[in-house]
Amino acid sequence: MEALGDNYGHGEIVALHCHAEDQLIYAASGVMQVSSDQGNWVIPSGHALWVPAAVGHEIRMIGDVCVRTLLIRPIGGERSPARCQVIEVSGLLRELILAAARLLNEHGDPRDHHVRALIRMELDSARRVDSHIPIPRHPRLRALCERFLDDPAQELTLEQCGAQLNMSSRTIARLFQRELAMSYGEWRTHTRMILSQQCLAGGMPILTVALEHGYQSASAFAAMFKRTLGYTPRDWQMSAVSPADTVQVH
Image 1: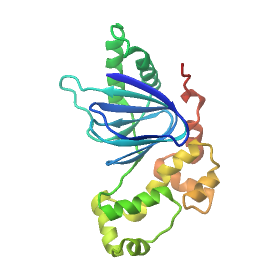
Image 2 (image 1 turned 120 degrees about the vertical axis):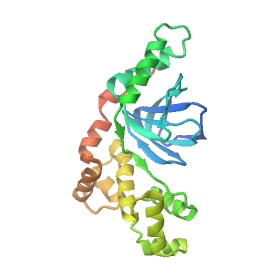
Image 3 (image 1 turned 90 degrees about the vertical axis):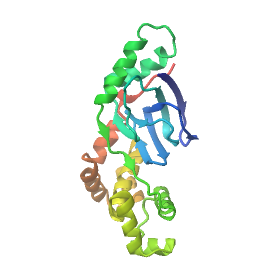
Image 4 (image 1 turned 60 degrees about the vertical axis):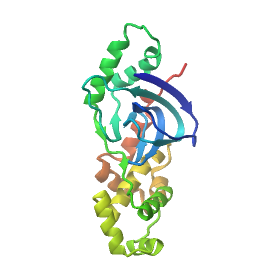
C-alpha cells in the first residue's frame, strides 16, 4: 500500500491516467468530478472513489481540493471491487487515510501493518453512495450525453436529440434502455441531481443551482433532489461544507 497527497485549486485537472494498483481517491476537502470509461462521478468532501487497477480516469477539481490517495495491492486471496464506486468515509477511515500519508511511506514503522489492516476493514464496511453518472458506449449517444454534462439545463426532447444525431427518437429510447437500463428522462434527472451537488458544495444559492440545472423554481428542484437522493439540497449543502471535513496540511 502506498499513500499520496496533494492540494489543488479550482478548475485544475489531473489528466487521464491509470495505476497498476487499486486506488482510493479521497476528497479530504472540496469536490472532485472523476471521469472514466465506466462513467462519471461527483465526489464531495468526506467521500472517496474506489478505482480498480488499470481503469483510466481524469479528475477535475471543483473549488480548492485536498486530495489523499491510497494505492492498494490485493494480498493473498483478497478480492477487490471490479468497478468504480463511491464510499462514505467514516471518521475512523478518514483518520487512517491521513495517518497513512505519514506512516506508510516510512518504512519500518511498527504501526504500518495495523494501519493497513484497519483500512481494509473500514473499506469493507463503508457505506456505498450513488454518485455515479452512467455513460453509454454508443459513440453518438455518448457524445450527446457528454454535451448534456456541460449544459444540464438543456431541455432537448427525444425528437430533437434524434435530429442532432440523425437517428429516430425510438432508436435513441431503445439505446438508452439497452445500454443504461433507464429512459432518457430518467438519465437526465439523475444526472442533474448528481451534477448539482458540486454547485451546492461550492455555496451556490439553491435557486441558482435549480435554474442552472433545468428547474424553474427552488421548490421543484428541492422536491426532485430529495426524491432522487433521499435528502434535501440544504441538508447536503450543510454536510458538504462541514468544518469537520477540513484538513490542515503540513
